[in-house]
Image 1 (cartoon, rainbow, N blue to C red):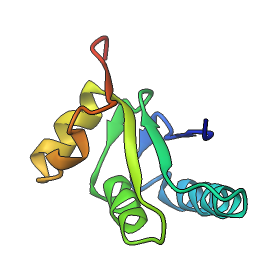
Image 2: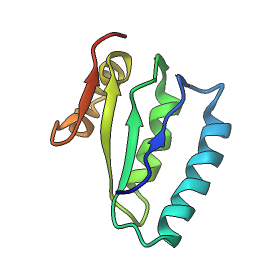
Image 3: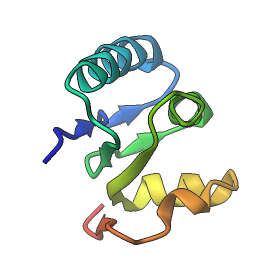
Image 4: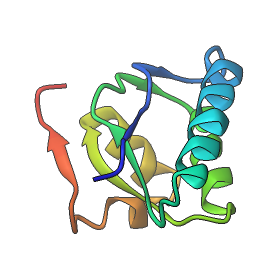
Length: 99
């Protein structure tokens, strides 16, 4: 099973650069290991803005497909607000109802 990328609790403009660097390093590692699907978890995301979601939109333009495996309530609300509800299709998605 592939290692998941855990998005930070604050997925916003203030953490965008650091998150981007970590995400790019993780994608490179997963590519080197021959992964054919990336798994991203947003279970710990408590605060999210457009900058944070842009990181995932950029990931969608990469060479490897990705899917969300867990999502917090704030993350799901932000996705729906910005028209990114398709990321929440529910095939393997677990939601965090406590946030």
